[in-house]
Image 1 (cartoon, one colour):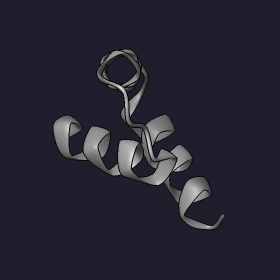
Image 2 (cartoon, rainbow, N blue to C red; image 1 turned 60 degrees about the vertical axis):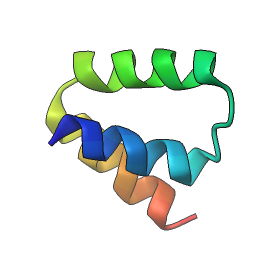
Image 3 (tube, rainbow, N blue to C red; image 1 turned 180 degrees about the horizontal axis):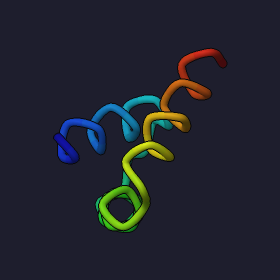
Length: 46
């Protein structure tokens, strides 16, 4: 689900501040799910 994707992305990006987490979570919820998965795949290859 989106909350799990959000957590994964935050972990990948090593986001530490609550403010940044809120913005990223809102972005993840707003964007297309396919885009989120693509971003996560890209991050996982870094």
